[in-house]
Image 1 (tube, rainbow, N blue to C red):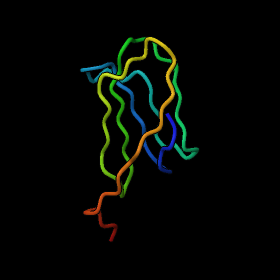
Image 2: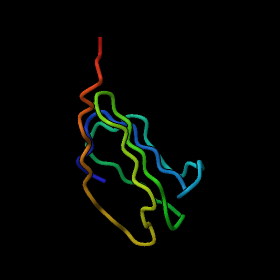
Image 3: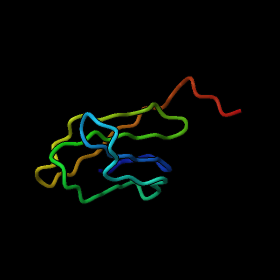
Length: 79
C-alpha cells in the first residue's frame, strides 16, 4: 500500500473480525507491506488530522499493490 500520509498507524484484520494479522504503529515511509496468510482482510488507517479510513474485504489471495487517498479531517483541531 502506498501514498500513506506520514505518520499513519496501519492495522490489518482478518476480514469481518477483530483478529489482527499485521500492522505498523508509525508508518513514516509512505508505504506499508505485509505477508498475510488469510484470503481477505480489512485494513484500517489512523492519522491525526485525517479522517479514519477502513478498506473492507481486500482480496489477498494474490499479491496486490495500490495507493490510498487519506482525506484531511476539517473538524480536527490540535490545540
